[in-house]
Length: 421
Image (cartoon, rainbow, N blue to C red; front, side):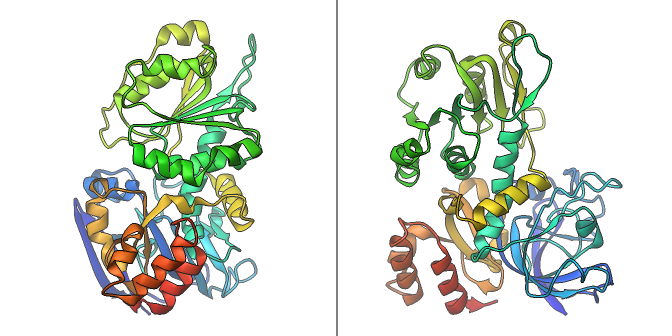
């Protein structure tokens, strides 16, 4: 069957093309992609081309489909897979398949026939062999797409560790009931981390979220309120650090001077990393969550405190299977709602320009519906655009009933009304 997909051929060389998919083998699955959210990692792969660790060297002659945060429906199952996977089921993908023969290979970076920026894909056997094709039982496709970034957040909470004084045992996870800071924490991934910190089983007692953008801080505070956090036993503080002379002192004051147990850095900025280093308490763990584009990126870290205060650093690039399973479970049961991550909606024909210009486009996640044609559109612009297009007016009414957030009702309406690609 034919598919339409955005393929990477080299540095900044993305092309939307229609081509024929081969017949699936007995150990493969044919699927329809419905939604795919665009990740900064795809921008980095586009910027670097074959120099990127996950992109094959021969991509110019064997292009790969981009996009790794996708959700859709299984439409045909090979005979070797039909006992576990069923036609009609929704699915999500863990792109970090950790193939022993190629540890960097991943859907959305490395394969000819599987990636999120497409209408139809062939899921290869290695994805099933590594248990990376997962059932998604929720209603909204976009939640299945956001499960992958949420799993990265879950992984970030799991990769941190702490040790009791005098012990060499690393107790994995954040300090339960401890003090946590999310620096530059109201971008899309930071918003997801606030949601998870408030609603996961192992929670901090104090959660401080900083940024220098007052509008983004106010939006975060409207979505994840201080009152909601308090109901879950978390004291939530939002802080704009742009006008504060002594940021480190102000942050440490919120901990009565003892410092933080877990500090997450959500922007690859040297000054922010150095602030994080200085606000750690005893046995404090700094998690550098934001992946830089510069392979030589570095910052100062207080090694006096490494020696005398047992401070340390952790980080993770993506989550693992268990993280994605947890994310899908919590999303399906409405424990987590990462809708606040999404600020723009578009169709498959918006992928190329959006990906190439991703750092320049304000807001959070750019959510793509791959079966439709639609320019990338900010949710906040729906009402204005509704003067010329009644579909956007209806969408504005729907999201405004939902605190300005994308939702399942909006998705259903869009998929019914939008122009097919």
